[in-house]
Image (tube, rainbow, N blue to C red; front, top):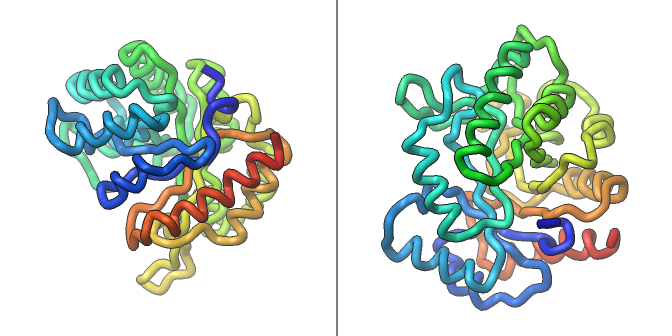
Length: 276
């Protein structure tokens, strides 16, 4: 399925917006959810997801496969994820380049790791296991960064490219992550976007960020504000080079009315159509 031809700009689906999401007939619209909220056997939430999926394409964006952990993905988690994917038939399925579980305990963060050759092989193995179990490809998202982590042998783009090459996975380019990481780590966001491999991009994310409430000069990937103009500019720079890609507006906190989110989504849709 060539999602770049069938999906335009989408929105994260929230329970507060189920009815408005179902009723909306905007061109190219699709919805993304965290599958962990729907990996159940029944109930009203799953029923709503199936109902919306009968009208709009869906995407599953996982937060707890823990692909970068020093162990294989949890089989029971994979079974529940596969059952959901088989049930709703998502157009896209993605996860984060991070670890969030250790010895059966889950942590509320997507945690970083040193990009070594050993980590590359371990994560490639975990991605391959996941794709074989699910019987579908996944996309892996570039992380957000807040501090300098020692021990890297590979650059981030080099690491992601090699993962894609070894496993056939796609890449999810989160433009907000690029912007705030460049700010926090002191590198060039334009150069990062320009170097990202066009052929591997299955999906793009746009989101808002905020200043660290602790007072440090850090930007936080908070998903609680509109997309910043600087992030829009980076997005425009990307799609002028690579062409239209399925693009999601992420908003997870301080939710505005659905119509306000739809205005942001329509802005992305107009930019995609201008590059078609």
